[in-house]
Image (cartoon, rainbow, N blue to C red; front, side, top):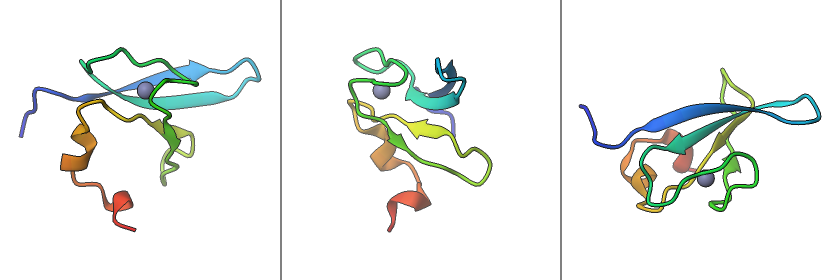
Length: 72
Ligand SMILES: [Zn+2]
């Protein structure tokens, strides 16, 4: 089940004191930033983490992963 590509959870502390967790693609063609990233991350609040921002990879790897949230 191992994949050459994975996702990394990064935590950013906003100046306001808020904490944002960003799920960013590893080894993407372009390095991802935190809040304000070029890929226009979307807030994807889950049951466990209400502050999770999901980034969009250039290679669209997320399309091939099982993600019930995308089936709306
Ligand atoms: Zn990004």
